Length: 267
Image 1 (cartoon, one colour):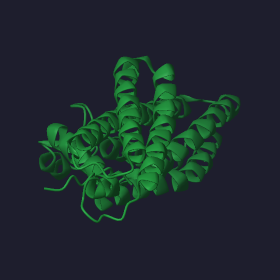
Image 2 (cartoon, rainbow, N blue to C red):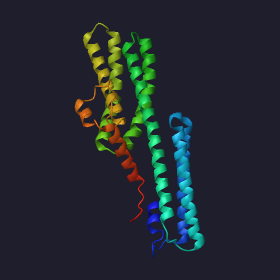
Image 3 (tube, rainbow, N blue to C red):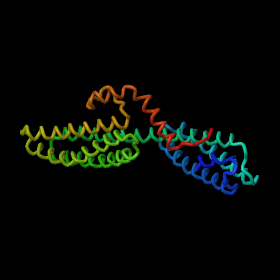
Image 4 (cartoon, helix red, strand yellow):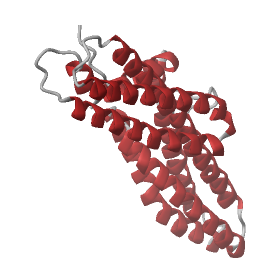
C-alpha cells in the first residue's frame, strides 16, 4: 500500500485520483494505530522493553499521521503533488519505527519461550528425583501443564521462522518432546514399581536425556545458534558454524523484517 503510494505520488499520469490517495492515507494511519496499540499493550506488560516500545510506537504513530495529512493535502489541492520528498521521509520513518516495534516484540517472545523451557526443565529435574507415586503424580501434573504452554509457544515460533533449517530443527525438537512425554510416564512408573531393576532405570534415564537434548535444541534455535558456555548438548559443528551468530543473527533478522515491510522509494 505504502509502496504504491510512494511510487505514484507525483508521477505524471499515475492514474491515482486525489480521493483515492486520501483514502490510502487514512487506511495507512488506521493500520498503524492498530499496530502500535498492540505494541503499547506489550510495553504495559513487560518493563524491560517498555521505554523503547513506547518511543517506537510514538514515532510510528507520528509517521502514520504525517502520511495521512500529506494525502489529505493532495485531495484538497485536487492534484497530485509533484514533490515526493516529504512522503518518502515519512514512509522511511514509519518503516524504521515499525521495525523497532517488531524487534522489541520479538525479544519478549524469545524471553517467554525460554522461560517456558526453563520451567519444563525444572519439572523434569523434580520428576527425576521423586521416590513415590504420590509425588510423581503431582509433579507430572505440573509438568504436563508446562509442556502444553511450551508446545504452544514453540509451535508459534516454528511458524514464524524463515530459515528452513531452523524450522526443521524446531519441528524435530517438538516431535521428540511430544513422543517422549508418554514414554516418560510409562518408564517412570515402571522405575518406581521396580526400583532395583537397572533396565527400567536405564530406560527412564534415556527418555530424560532425549527430552533435555530436545530442549537444548529449542534453546539453540530460539537464540539462533547462540548458546551459553555451559550448554554442550548441541553438536560442536553447529557451534563452530555460528561463531559470528550474535551480530550476524541480528542483522539477518533485521534484513528479513525490512523485506517484509519493504517500501520502494524509486530512484
